[in-house]
Length: 478
Ligand SMILES: [Fe+2]
Ligand SMILES: [Fe+2]
Image 1: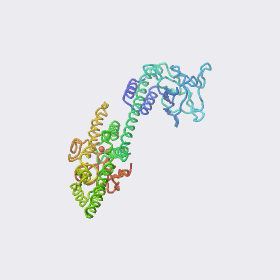
Image 2 (image 1 turned 120 degrees about the vertical axis):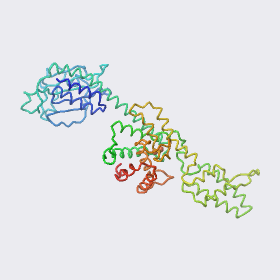
Image 3 (image 1 turned 45 degrees about the vertical axis):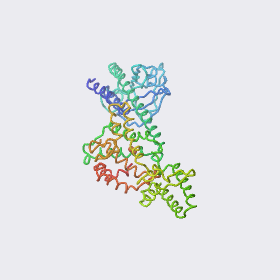
Image 4 (image 1 turned 45 degrees about the horizontal axis):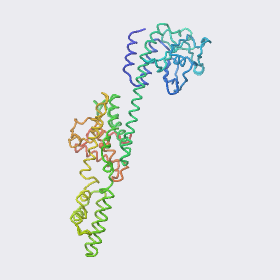
């Protein structure tokens, strides 16, 4: 036995969090410690009281296996060991004492030509002595050699009392590491599920941008992954698994703050809401009735004004002639039935219709922009772990511009986290190419790339990231 090997095992148990990596590595190190030809780890499933056969290693033959479950009963060595929470040592499984309730299933040996002989099963118990899994080590060898049919009897020996004692001492730490890793995975899955549900809820309020979050996340992650691989263009850009999680959460939550934006503003296909347009229509009809009895010209003028109102209501760029008509409408008033003065277009209606591009008034545009303040604010209330503490900061950076003209904080150049700069490219690309916005036609990929390139030249987007995105045709690999 070797103290260094034990230290290595303990180090691995406390440093690896990924369940599969942790178990594979632990099994390998434990087998190395006691010179075992093969081994496996079963994980206890409390839902159906079974052991899940998860990890298997064998130095002498290639083993391919499918995960399967066995009931936690007395019938096999591993399940008996788990059920009774007892260490079971069998010197030769082909000669198990007939008084024992467990048997050895020879199917695997028959199928593979392998000879299983000495077996040690150790229950993996946490500090409350709850069963977490079972460690099974197979064929303790005198030395590290490959087993063949001719050397089996010479090479395989029983496990020694010292082997059993050391492995049993280590099994407690293995159990705790295994339990932590399972718990960590459960928490991560729960958190992922919560985030997915939140996004679904947010996007349900704004159906025209459905799928935007998912696409932005995919594009961003792909750009980052390629940047990480490319040592020539981005030699300093390297991501650890924690960085990947940080960026993924930041992407998934980048528009989380839309929850704080009123629904009718989020989803405004025309400049006027239907009820407003309806009210305007009746005012026009009334004014036309009045005009008809007095002047044909005035009547025709109103007909053409109304056409201009309908055209202006569309989300296209406002034509200057229509703009003039609107101005005249805003100055036009007529007498109501009680002699009161009625304006054809109220000031608020006029300013809505006079929007030059898109459908949002200045105030509404500001409200939409406020989603990133909300993103920052809401996410900041979550007690993030140390490794994820930058999620709120990064999630809200996707509308910042390199020249400092973006929002929410007006950050400049490298003040914007590189993850934020990548997300900005992905966000714009998706907003341009998304096919699901009725009020804004999707543009072709070529046009979108041209616009993005212009944005980079105008110092709005990160030039290097945009060039990389276009050169590598990342948009084609999502
Ligand atoms: Fe956004
Ligand atoms: Fe977005």
